[in-house]
Length: 590
Image 1: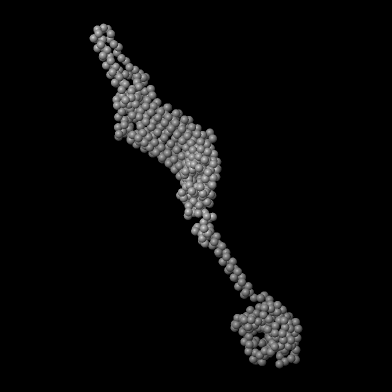
Image 2: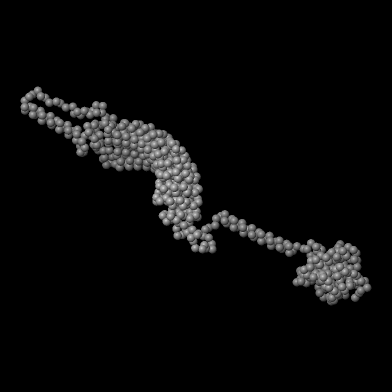
């Protein structure tokens, strides 16, 4: 019969009884001995339902109990675990589904796509030789066992695509041999343990599609062995670490941080990950600008920074990364033109720069290679479709621009129009004032129009006549006589003489009064000024006791000025009246 000692199986057989030397007895004994060997062979070397031979290894008691505990926690609707019998036979010889052993200890549990439900038992930690646990694509729930991180030789844990919840056990960071940890597509929450990447052998870490929160642990950016890091589709916050590169993560090839709530500027230290092939920061709130040092990533194939708030220009140096196949800058705040150097990327199969603030023409090779959806949403970008031709390629531009005016343009136009209107109003006002402004050299009495009766002034003598025709003006220089322009129109006149200032007339009014009238020439301001000065001189020298001087204008169309000399005592001037040669003759009357 078979048994185990310290985990090792042994066989014990009863020797032949050779005491009886009878031939018949000897033959019977040989037949029974052969039959016993056949039974043992059937029991121990042939696995029920399998053609694989028994390797002579029996599972240890601890591992057997651990597997039975795991089976009890599982829900197996399809009966994949029926082979896990209660005797432990063939557990390590392929008889148990998904189990592999070494020296009687379980080293692999591999049961993906088996529709298993339930939860993972804490007693899985009894499998101290376990190296790989693969239960992905099932319906397992509950939390990840803490004891899983206490298995010293654990190298790979693949529990993705389940319904695991709770937090990630910090004990997983204590597994010194852990190389792959894939917990993606579960319901895990809370923060990522700070020591999760402490293992110097960790190569792949995938925690995507969970509900993890908090910041990215610094240990992840300083792992010397990590090659694959995927934290996308979580609720991570805070800035993207800027501690990558140099001696940190020298082997990192894939970095996926998209679909989180990360903030801060674009991390320049990513340019130091010289082995980086794919990285995605899309759907975050990362700002800043793109460094030109990205050209150092000579092995880069995929770059996705879409749906962020990155500003500045697209680095021209990206055209030096010949390995690029995927570039996505969409939905950012990038400005400037699309670099022509991007046309040198012969391997580029995907390009998207839509919904930015890019301007200028799209490089011809890019517009021919990619559809218009790769460039739409940039109002000042042209040349990527038949409806967005650049001005140089368009027919003569229409009279009016189709681009709507900005608020700034409208304000400038309104301000300019207002200034022009104000200038025009000021100009018109000045013109009106200049036209209405009286000649400062005129006596104050000249402001009234003709046709009004002359009024006597106290001193110096001038009075204005108002009313009547607005074009005429009658001014009396201190005298007893008062008459109007109409009186002069009805009077008889006789030419007495001419001078440079105008023509003198002898005029007899209807009441018999005689006056001398001198009609000044139009457009002769010097005449008026000189004559006015002379009259004032006469007035001050006493001549006004003998003479009365009056100035009248009655013709509004010609705007003539008349000089009137009224004789107080029937005094008449000489027939040749000149401004500089005037004398009085008391003997001349009539």
